[in-house]
Length: 445
Image (tube, rainbow, N blue to C red):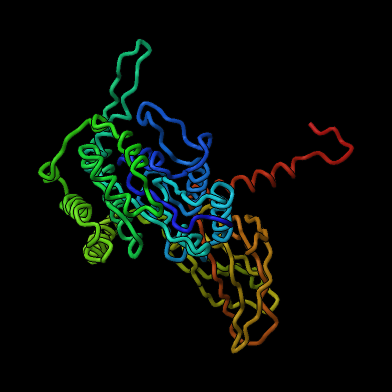
């Protein structure tokens, strides 16, 4: 792959002014893709969003896979690389770079959801020896919330405006999203060249803002290019004016994060020297703690069960646990005779389960456990073993022919998110369709 080694990755928040900055950077010489590749302009971004459809589609697919929602504050789990499918996503992102920017010396992208997927992007950037530059746009959080609110203004058939007022929680969510994105952007770009720009300052004095930004860019910006960027800035783009005082009614972390961003914008040299890193980390940890204190436990606590027959009697062992969303290991003693069939219920609700390891431990022996799908499961090989579980007894195995207490150990990853439930539903439909399909030579009904 022949790429310029310093891509420009534009960061900020939704409705945070990143499209305005992208327009200026394109005029200054940045290549962000072919015109046909971008999300179309509309009344909210008349000069265009500059969001490449390849990045939009990729981010949407990966966020669903990791149980993130649109306009959410969930980030990649720490063990994301151990999750099934991660290698595929990395290869896909590598392909996006190659297909869209090969041969480009000056290139970059802007798609806000990149913030939630930073660790994944960093792997491909490092793999290709790329050292990005990060312009970070900061806009007053209440202006961001107000801009989102204006998106809910729709026209009636007669052309008049019909205002669908956002409920108070929506404004709260907009501010929470702003805090999360800005802290994540500052935290994830630690150690890389970055330049924080105040949106309000950009509109008021574009020459100062873009001249400062030009020093970060990985090409020699000519006076003509700089002027072209300046000419794209419309001072009337901002429809609201807020001050730091307006943030007083809100939790102080909003004002403290905004103050930090403004100080970083005033002293980008100190930012790149690491002066603000400890403050960013402290705010981030506080923000995460606040979220963890109120986050809903999902999926709910369940039970793993092993069941077998002892003569005419049905016996079982149950182990309550909470699915963590990551790899887990559970062990249970099965007091069944050698050769007995054991049914395994991994969870009490429909789910998708990846199985990395299933063994019997008898004394000092470790014996692989043969696996078959049970009456309420569909088992397939997809790199790892994948089970679609629809109820009790989704798996079966046999107790080994060995003397001593037999303990069954399973290492698994249970997924309960909408994408996984949809995958389970599709797999079940395929099996039902196959069962209903008429035999060759018959007419069916």
